[in-house]
Length: 281
Image (cartoon, rainbow, N blue to C red; front, side, top):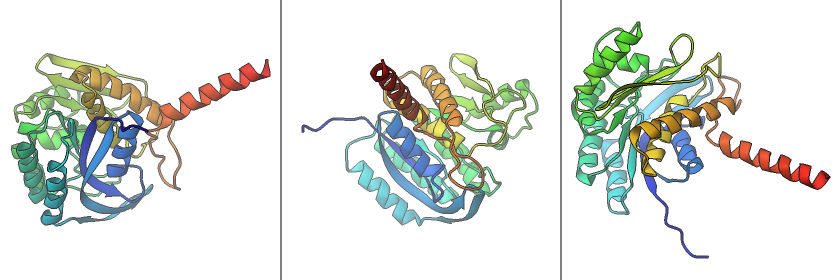
């Protein structure tokens, strides 16, 4: 069987022992969307569907060795960052991304876990704004993260637009403030050089679903890897995360997890139903 060339995307994030977020969710998303995922692990977390119990940020030397191995191999078409842990890691990642001259940099500014555990130091947030965002194509903060990055309290759509404009001044290519924590339907607000665009959808769950932020930003990175323009990539990822939420799974006794392979499973079920129907005739 001949080899098949495939586009690759790099995720730089923490490991989720529960499998619902972090590196694990990113890799499943990449595979589901037809790109090859490579990884740099920044932190080891002990967590499950109830939340994060503990974290261990890897030594800078270990993270740098992983990055050098990636740089010595075939180049990835996109990079997605998630949990970075501290300012030393943010600074290193920023330098290595510039050294590798990567394009399509999607930054998911993970500061807190959904259960409230702090995952990025205060100085790490400062370094993120000063060093990583200026070289990024897109940053995807939720409401709380957008408040930290902009320095303002967000209570209205006008506040979201103002926060996005402030964050954009950091030098990042575009800002997508996700709306999962809004009351009512989730509206994601994108601000880029073309202006603002709101991506709306129905609320598909009344409870928090673990891993949605990771899966959404990973899906955008995967779409960019395939060559989609930013707004089309966001639109496609928005539809994809909706499927992942609808197909959510109870992998433990706590919160349900988004299912990155939900679309594939649904297509298989549809094909099987058609097959069964045809054979029953």
